[in-house]
Image 1: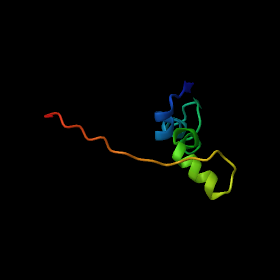
Image 2: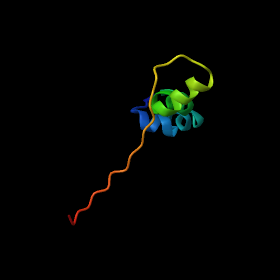
Image 3: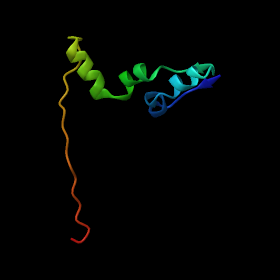
Image 4: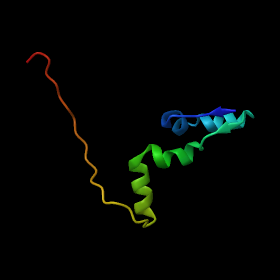
Length: 69
């Protein structure tokens, strides 16, 4: 039996692949792992189906570093 973790391999579908080739696996499918692995995905899913959740502010930024000074 394989216990899959952390989140990145689960979201990438490792558990799905192991199950496909018949290896006993403990871990959620990539679809289920996406609920925990991507907060943005989960918030959008909640919004789409009017599921109550905490308010969120989506922000993005770019850090520009000038190594020359």
